[in-house]
Image 1 (cartoon, rainbow, N blue to C red):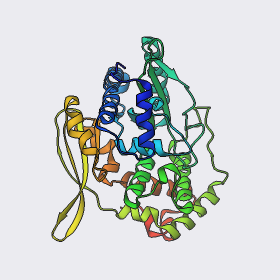
Image 2: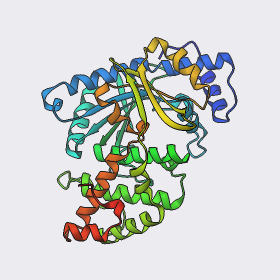
Image 3: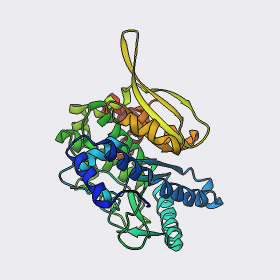
Length: 367
């Protein structure tokens, strides 16, 4: 990454952000240049993925692909996390790509092929290959997926752009989306383990349920069916008890979807989530519009300085935008449906009518 600033200057900017100290105009320019310096690595990895995804083996498998530039407030929150003590110059997910697969088998096969492809180019280094494998070692929150981190191959101590590639199944994505929607609605940090203990446990149990009855592939040979020390019956009863007390699934089911205005043709998109006042009341709305990389600094970075604004710059086609960023639409319908199906399978020894009578109404599938 070619820059007009030094690594020590960037670190000072990071320290100010960590302690919520306002930046000077010059420091704002350093931060903007640093974030924009990830453009080339995002575009390079978009091209690598698109080349592979266009091949007949993958083209018809329903794989969703998106990329994004990390939001300013998310960047600041990560720096401020005392447990991480993150150095901004070493932050590896300012640039990010996400791929969402229909099943675990396709995810693992594609990821292996992509790793080989990138390494063969000799332009990027694959950092700590299995450190972020959250399928083998799920996070305490219940999060599952695989993250790969790549870094530019550059000589000496130059500042090197990094990118994080996230691999999820559609089920794991539905769970992660539900957790983010909960956080958005309740202004909390369940995603980082900072919510009420009961809420955290219930989301973790839902993640375990969906893993056992949606994603687990016994033929993979590298994963355990159970990551939580509960048999299926105890898992079922624990979820019922927690849901009766906390009504998480019911809340997500009944949450009103965000009205969206989407006017895009290309794949460089600015998403703006905001509150709209009308008729004496307020509703959440979403606008998606085209944004070129050349306009990012004036159209995004300057507006982000007002922390009440919620913007994110993504690269996604209109076909996949709503499905890949459904947290912006408050759409947890996929999660609710998958939980219902998994709960039915968990209690599959009973007839469907018995299942309906036994479970709370929130668990009953719509006809």
